[in-house]
Image (cartoon, rainbow, N blue to C red; front, top):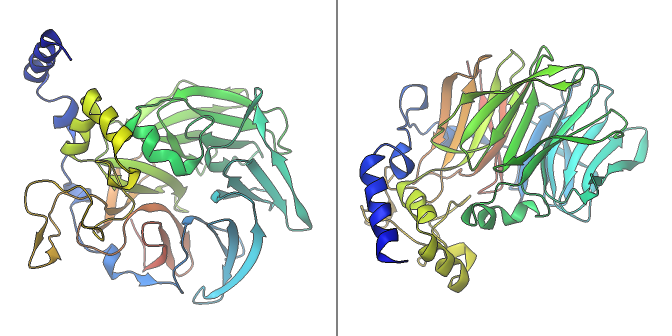
Length: 373
């Protein structure tokens, strides 16, 4: 980088003092830090790779973990039954209005499982390109199916590299209830992670992780209308959102944004050298879990004292679930701070017993008794 490049960067940092690295909003109001996630009940033994949870109309709970999809039943949700096992990692789940289970499978595409037919039907390509990176799926009341691919041609386990390369080639996929007539209504999205249809079927909601935003699009008979940004500067990287059964949503944020990471994303030479010379686990980047390896990058500011990680330390990983009302306003949140146990929240859904939460960072399924309003 030459002298004038350094000079221009410094001038921009003075003129745009509230942009870039200084734009991360504080956690306050409905997002004020707490330890409520750490007080949740753990359901059963840990499930490495747990990723998504979705509730069926009969009260059963489906979850994806590793290459398997499991069904949980019983009053305490402790009974686990294998529903399907795939060659790739199972990710996003949804229940179609006709009762089929929709599953995003890494490296393969979208599977539709009919309870009466053990052999799934597949959607594997759109516009001549494979669906290797599907993250989430949802179905509208009229049967239409929508899915998001975080990064075209890249599997979900490469999410950290996608962020550090500052990619933005995700897409929204739409198809009919029979998985036919697939199209791409939206392209060049910065890692779309979550997608959901509103309770009235009138709008499609979408999260974009690398843009830290939540958007809403009118859902018409012909497709999508003009979208609007509901939350444009979230304090973390949004994951999936699922309906709460009362016109609102549960939104998981799988990691917090930090000024150090924002700074590294601006320093191209350093970032490229870091990616070239260091193992991925030690990059200065978000993580689903952290604190167990002394070689992990840490920020100046006092991370540990007497061997205990401070809850207010700059977080390498974090646990955060947010409840949104029908207009997308945050009303309540559950946290597991830097020194907490349950980080990397990727999904949550409403069941009779309360709210079930997938904490991918520790492979735990959590139950929060009571309502989130």
